[in-house]
Image 1 (tube, rainbow, N blue to C red):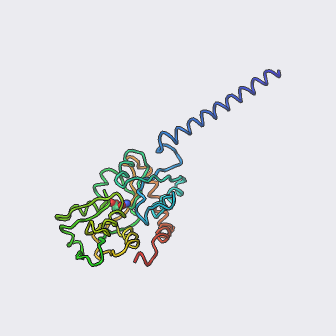
Image 2: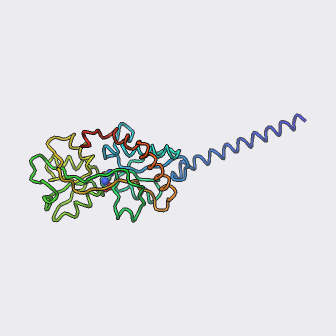
Image 3: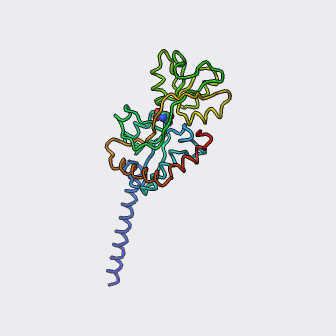
Length: 260
Ligand code: GLN
């Protein structure tokens, strides 16, 4: 009798142990092999060189997009893990499934829509022109034939490329383009308005021209086959807009006097 009991206890113990072993094996597979499949984490691709939307604070990536993404995650009951990469790697990361979504002050364009779907928009933006104080460039028309710095793969890059006889210098970071301008290596920088304000505030002798180059809208990029995620993110965005949370996040990073 006693022996029988011992055997059954051992059997139960063995089962429990093997279940636990199986369980932990599955867990490691989830987090290791495919980030997209892990149920409780969404991977966000961004380029943290774009203040106030995404930038580094110590080891963390913070900013409007980071906060909005985390708030969306909270609405969906999911964690958000941020992966920092080159701006022009974000859409490939989303289409390949390496990331679940891209949030990077990304402008909705017809061209990008061929590769990804966009959520509803959450911000409007402009492309602005930064020049040195005293520059003879007073508006977009004066950019003809000039040396223009942009961040690689951005809408600024696309628009500058269309300017007649302009020479476009492409940089990995927007701030590098601004540095090149201060060093007289280029004549102007075409970049999004909010990062432009941050970069100009940190440099000497630069100004942003009053006349905006274009108007655009930012949205989050999701893979084309991921309708479920798109729907859930849109629902979360709508509720965050309604509750005033989006405005609150924007106000945290863009003070009223800076926003003009
Ligand atoms: N809004 C611009 C674009 O979508 C720039 C974004 C960025 O540099 N992060 O191309």
